[in-house]
Image (cartoon, rainbow, N blue to C red):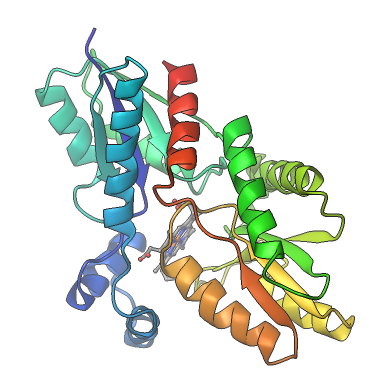
Length: 296
Ligand code: FEC
């Protein structure tokens, strides 16, 4: 049986001119009102233009293919994006043309949510031809090598602040309506945070959401900016942020954490540090290979 891995990630516009089409896709075909578009373009400008997310995703996939090969599993790793070409559905079609009969779907986001992994799964499933199997891994936040990797990143960031910090573990918020449908997302985030904190010997930590969308519905809280404000009022001197819900340096990290959250902390007199992201670090790639091998 011809097997493959389908690596899936969010995708980013590669030029500022493409931000409108990208944002329209995120909004399921409804073009963004001008003020929202302008604000998003400005956020990209502030991080130096479109982010490297697509390139990082491709490097992660390439390194994963090489690592699997070293482990005696010669199988191609395809890349499909949620909101940028090549879209997940197109890539599933390409895999079928290449004669792939079974694929392991690996979303490059560790926690399951109806608004994250479930949506990638739906895109893949909608394009899947009869006779082809796609098993998307539901979540991999608790993979031991991945947790080890995050513990090391946290220890490294803790070494960069002098005062004893409050550690904030963050993930992308999602509309809170998912809770009525039993979404395990908040629970999985608590598991991640608890496992990392206990392994790193960190006693003072909180979970916070970030990057809530610009829509009128309620999103999961507390928001990181509110938490930072509370911490300042409580007299905290330093904060270390670990964005456990993401695996790459992209807009939600480079702008929402490195610019917005940092400014919120430093303007209130607190020291601030953010943990390094996994990107294509060999130890992270090895963890991904473990996750895929188990699914195979
Ligand atoms: O570097 C880049 O250009 C890409 C940054 C990026 C990542 C990302 C990850 C996640 N999102 C998730 C959920 C939502 C929901 C909505 C939503 C909207 C946006 C907008 C931008 C954006 N997201 Fe995103 N997300 C990234 C970028 N996201 C830009 C539109 C402007 C805004 O609201 O800020 C609301 C959609 C709607 O209106 O229906 C929901 C989740 C993740 C983490 C999992 C993953 O990576 O797939 C969940 C990276």
